[in-house]
Image 1 (cartoon, one colour):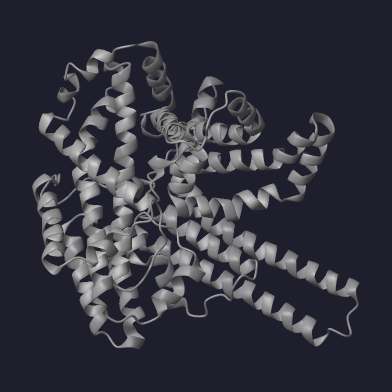
Image 2: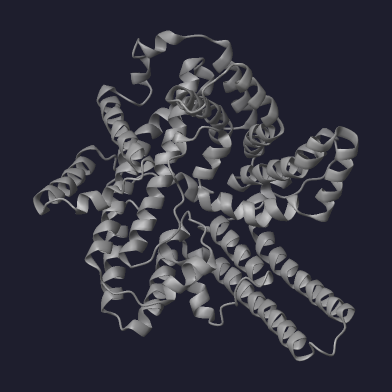
Length: 532
């Protein structure tokens, strides 16, 4: 059931109608039923996998919570009896017990994800090595399915377990309620990746009908539909033509394909997030913001702080900090300090941790060497910016660049868009070698005439579509600038007279119905990140 479909809109209407007439104590039950219904309608075969993750995570959370409570109780009751060394020894034993409990659950949940998503990738590479060695052996390629949303709800489950392990909050005592936390239907398709302490209590509480929230949620859904159907799906044929037939193109044409894909995936993914947030907001639930105008970023580091925010936040809290602050990386930093000096020794743990994070981000996107290369591309630039920051600052000072003026910020934004677009060759290219070939032919062939001879009108975007894209792109730019300046657009519209408000709403709806790309009936292309 695609978000941009009449079926979803009808489903959402039923969910919201039932939710607001349901008794307060049963509202969360209704949400659970609806969430599992949504999942079953999308992929009935995969429901066993999310149930497995839910049960394993719930049980492990309860065990970790019990260990935490018992430790607090024991230490409190024996505060005056135990020596400092005995307390330390008792805590160490509990930490060991907790680590093994957490490790078992992570192995089960992450192992399932890795097996389903990456087994055939590993098998294919092993078979290639065996073939090159002329060994008559072969790892079988399995016909595996990838359950809907497994990459998202697995990380959400692991984040919950690590937080309980850290005693950040008490584990959920109700299995059914916890099942709702992992399966909440607006975010099951492609996130955002929620934190338990931010989302769970909202799901369990009863929310009353509020016109303002319903109106704001509907507006957000409409905006998401416009981004997806007017921009993303209109760019799709152009992007597909260039990347699927890359040997036929070169120079600026290839770069335009990468640039177009960047904006396609942004409007596709952020449009889906707007629909998810809007659907939740109608119900009185605020889910995490996942995008903050990434194409206004002045560096790749800032780009990733604005892009897929919940994934970045997850990686920061559960991968980056544990690595950067670990004893092993601490020792490595001290050794580097003795060999390379204080600066290198100080930043080396951060440098390596950041590189590993972005390597994992790349691999998270899919089971192919091109995603490994995509992670390395981003990791090199972001880690390199940490390493070379003093050099960068000296160059700016020597050239007497005013870093606070508009022109410098504009240059940084264009530079960031350019570097991110080159990285898109890896994430969208049919293979890693194809991406490298496209990059080579982008920089070795100079053909600026394609910008004026209208030849790209033959690649899936005609003149009419180009006018629509430019117009909608300008709307997106204006909205982004207003948001960057702290203007809350929906609040501003709500302050206007009734006739003007409805003129805006109906005008936006008319634009969507006239210029939206609906494909086969009212069924758009699948969301790009739904496939991850």
